[in-house]
Amino acid sequence: MSDRGGDRGGGFPKWIFLILFIVLSPGIGILIDTRILFPPSPDAHGHGIPVFTILLPLFAIVTAGIIGIIVLCKNILKSASLRGKHYEYLKVFQQSDNVQAPVLVFHEIDLAQGRCSVRCIQIYRNRYVERFTNHGVYMPVPPAGSMNMPLGQTAYPTVRQEFDEIWNSGRYIGPLTL
Image 1 (cartoon, one colour):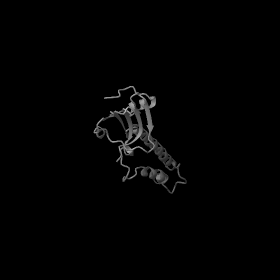
Image 2 (tube, rainbow, N blue to C red; image 1 turned 180 degrees about the vertical axis):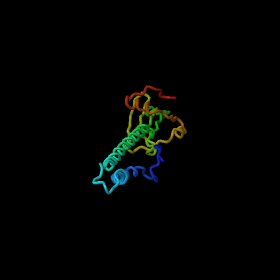
Image 3 (cartoon, one colour; image 1 turned 135 degrees about the horizontal axis):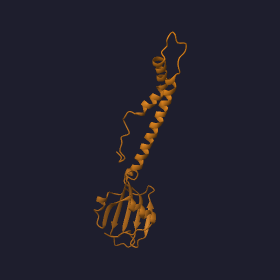
Image 4 (tube, one colour; image 1 turned 45 degrees about the vertical axis):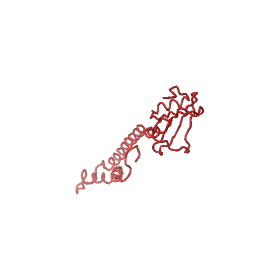
């Protein structure tokens, strides 16, 4: 199950009632007009104005439009509130004797795609920043707890704001070691 929530299968679609109301509204309007408002009588030479025959389908269509707009707004708000929640951001300090190896690595991990690193930032001892974008070739990134096991490597969760600031500016001002 994804972290976005909601179960998409197995339920009865509630919108079917709205479609049935729209389809049946002309018949319901005719029924109300001919049987309730203007029932046939022997002395009547004509019928009155078919109010519900005209207004009920219009009411059904307007109601469907309003409900559609409300559902669309709810979906937009829901997707906006979920944006970025299926990503995890890691900051990995690496201690190595190799002077050409990065000392700090940031990962943007897509949790919905098997923990693959979507973007990666490598920072070297001279504060040179190198940015990489995943094109489907990177291995999955393990959780921070399991990355702390090997010697010389310490991983911490970080926030998207820190990652984006470094990604957009191409500079890292923070500490290079723990």
